[in-house]
Image 1 (cartoon, one colour):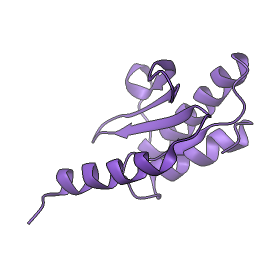
Image 2 (cartoon, one colour; image 1 turned 90 degrees about the horizontal axis):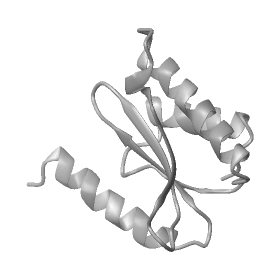
Image 3 (cartoon, rainbow, N blue to C red; image 1 turned 45 degrees about the horizontal axis):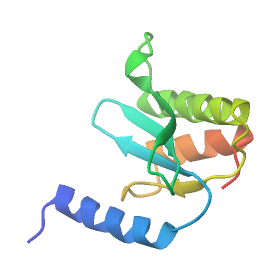
Image 4 (cartoon, rainbow, N blue to C red; image 1 turned 180 degrees about the vertical axis):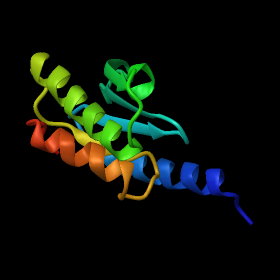
Length: 112
């Protein structure tokens, strides 16, 4: 049987193969402690922006820090005139911290 990490990687490969868009993608990685968000140029494979909650000083709920990261990445993207992205959830289920990050980015003005 496949382990949890192997299943997530398999889902992630399936998702990224379907994305194939001209728009940059908002890619996330979720560890047990932190959440990381990057906006990657799909054509060149270069990271345009990144944000993570490992540098946030105050201790708070993981979902609340995910909301802050979503808002932060959206503000950085709008400053660089990136308005539309494709959301790449990295093989994670769309709930909890992943959902909080996505909804906060949408509320801050990012479209996907």
